[in-house]
Length: 390
Image (cartoon, rainbow, N blue to C red; front, top):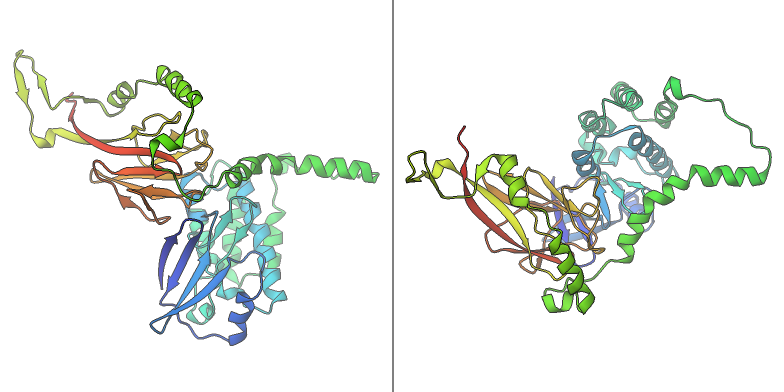
């Protein structure tokens, strides 16, 4: 089985190749011609006699990506268990085998706009003896929030149940009822319909708040970025904002020097007062993203990696202000002094040298590259800095 990713101007796909397993004909017809809740929309393409399964993951993010950014707590596990119950119920309704679900954190997706979990159905998978739901919870246990006692109990309880027998809805129901004993409170009776409506609104208020940013991203989705700077932010008011923003810029060079304990020079004055030249191994390569747009963004100078870029100030390292940028848009990775960028299936995409990047696929960056996060353009630069000897 080979998994690839494809990003177009408006769609994102996860493509599974070399998985031509035998299956009943009705299975494929069922998933192709029905909008089954909790399943990723699927298309089948035959190329050179080989079958490819294309799953539409537009506006979604895998659980693997989410857990790499933040550990799984009680709230995340409850959402997952509730959606597992819905998925199992839908499988029964459409006479499908849930053993054909790819239970792997990198193939289970959350819709950023609806909050629903979507699973990948692969016809014929059950005949290959897949790890089943146990494999998914093996991934989750590695990312549990161990400071959350309820999450720990729920995670290990579900893992043990999956290890002992096949997945059944009763197992999910049992884990959903796990609570923190200190926080248990007796149920309060609701006397009339007006009070029932008020209670429902209060219980669901947090859902509306959490979805506000996702709705904003959907409203501000664009088809293509504007690479010409003079077209991106026309008008005097943007230039005035940019001028005010420049006046408030932080001295990132000082921060970088303190963080990495390096000096900005390829040569330096030694204790003797003479110029001393240093060998290549005494230097370290650092990277910067210089802002080239006409908006209000600032240069990005990572001081640690991975370096997450987006608009969510609580979760990212490089904060962008543009409404076209996603909350968690992309991240920078460093390996052997080489810089890579990876798009997180953002709403409006990431463009490298005017070409749309695939999602979930790290791509190496070089000096002079132009990278655009939605509509915000940056130029990649690097320099050799001298290590500070203690």
